[in-house]
Length: 370
Ligand SMILES: N[C@@H](CCC(=O)N[C@@H](CS)C(=O)NCC(=O)O)C(=O)O
Ligand SMILES: [Fe+2]
Image (tube, rainbow, N blue to C red; front, side, top):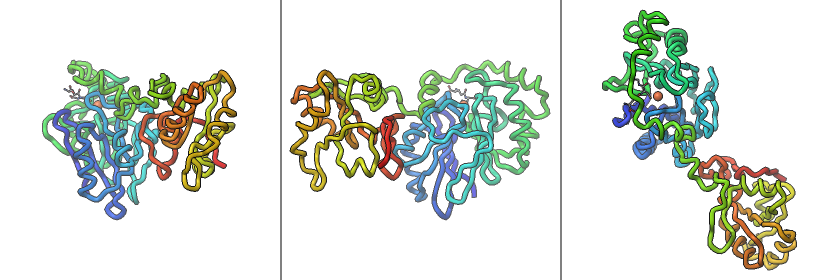
């Protein structure tokens, strides 16, 4: 069985989808943001459940859709540990194996194009990213690239794989789709029969223009392609809001609690706190009460009792809806009240919350379960 090979003509990037034919668990390697719809359609067409989105490296020429695939398809993101992709849930080390259904894929650290670059071996296939291209190889002139390291990765790591291994590159600029380790070992003009010194001289003489999108692509790819900095939950600023003092992230709320300037008040029900978890030493003043989710008649009195004079109050609920209503009421009661964006389900890394099945992220707040 071959992988599904998909091509982005703008960046000449290959994306790969592999899957277990029984369980339909799938992984995607090096997805491109502008091809998100295509990739989701491929998953639907084949009836696949995306469990992993893998990166071979932090790309300099296009933006990944890994973060969006995590949000939209529920995939876990995985990236080489030395690539600095802070949002990747799995930080891969050399030799690590990932499973999808009964299938396994193994990570090989192959520095050179970038210091963290990896290739992935699945059955008798290798996904070489920009380490080995067909009749070529990745450039080594940016992102801690090193021609000497690449020579070692090519000759001592990739060329040690069986000759019959199919090579699936991360890019091709001439319309070629696949090769083999044997063919590249014998005929790759940059490395076949070349000494380390000859290879380094070839790489030093390339003088390629920088990728057109490098300044935008690299910072985005270090956050899984999501505009991490633009996500309000990640901002340590107060966002103005009508009817109360403002919206803040869980991280800023907790900073205020630690500094003593604010009191955190949990407005969820007792049942939610017991089931999902709670922030230790935090007063609970339910906005609505279970059973029936009726308004808590004692809300005003309980809230005023929980907030010492002169302190701000930050309000926490499950998803950031009840806490807005509570913040408005607290403001009417004369308090300086803030809402924690996306509540207890907010993801401090800026990924959309996944609900209970995907694991609560607790918005960067400390928490315990009863
Ligand atoms: N013209 C392309 C540049 C492509 C490029 O530099 N690609 C990198 C991979 S990210 C590379 O290693 N290319 C090797 C080569 O062109 O030989 C762009 O502007 O995006
Ligand atoms: Fe690259």
